[in-house]
Length: 251
Image 1 (cartoon, one colour):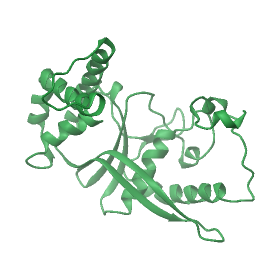
Image 2: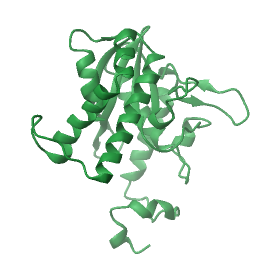
Image 3: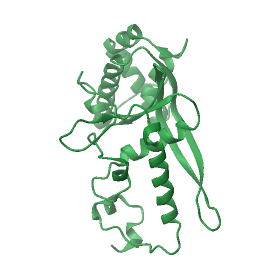
Image 4: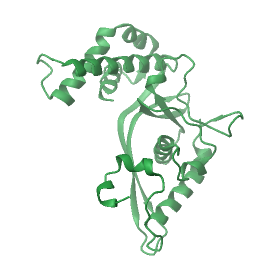
């Protein structure tokens, strides 16, 4: 993420518009792309100054090359979207929700959006993913239905879209960019919804889904904070693998 942030900070040093010729020049310059990865490793991993010599061990070198490959795929995918205006990178957003409870509990929701860009009157909320596969939920309800294959990534991106829809007037389009799949020219980060074996609908205007998403989100939060609802263990044991509380849960 930080490597991509460095790239786009340089590309937008003069103005916020990303142009085809600038992206193409960088995409063909593999050494330059690698330099952004090296800069990120220096700051975040080794915590050394930009002037100090970088010495990778074998695993670190492999990881740096993989990240450089991901950046190249990101640039290639963005070439299909140019020109566009870069609004923000690693943007923290939040919104206070008031629950319909006896004491009117207030909940702060939000997170960090990897990238926000704009084109043709549409604000795109982009979340980068380096693993997993794109999912196609049937409807908004599926995002809130407990299941092993619940589309968690889409839920997160829709939450960001809901927040940004209240902060500005452009149409909002949430997107999930699976970087390891972005090398294909046919790949698109646009989130789609629809029934299996039927035409899918791209989510290009989140306002069509926002009311139902917010209604279900508030309902879920009110259920969580309802003292009359039993606090039970999940029946989906796969979720326990990375749970921070599995040591005291006893499941």
